[in-house]
Length: 148
Image: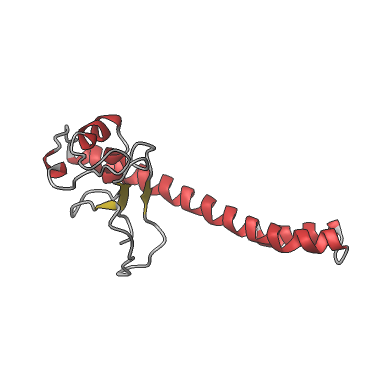
């Protein structure tokens, strides 16, 4: 769901730090995925970026790595027991400040990702036309200005 944090649970993705913050789903929309990641969701009243911040920390990742089982090359973090991870909890004021800051930051990151995707699509559409001579550089620049 929107605001969830996904953490890869299998080697080598877990060791490489593969994780994601879900911000592409609409309200009430549910995504489907693999069993090779663990979903973290914030509790009511807790900013959705808190699980992402915790899961991305070196301390949490060390803790999670201790739960891995399986053969070499196919070890997996076990979700059971991760809820026992202990951390210092801020007061309500600090939590609210973090929420305001993180919401704004995540919004900007999402907007930058979306713009990058639009520009890549535009590049992929314009490059063949430029190479074939069907459009000029000036035409391409005008199209890019419209996208940005």
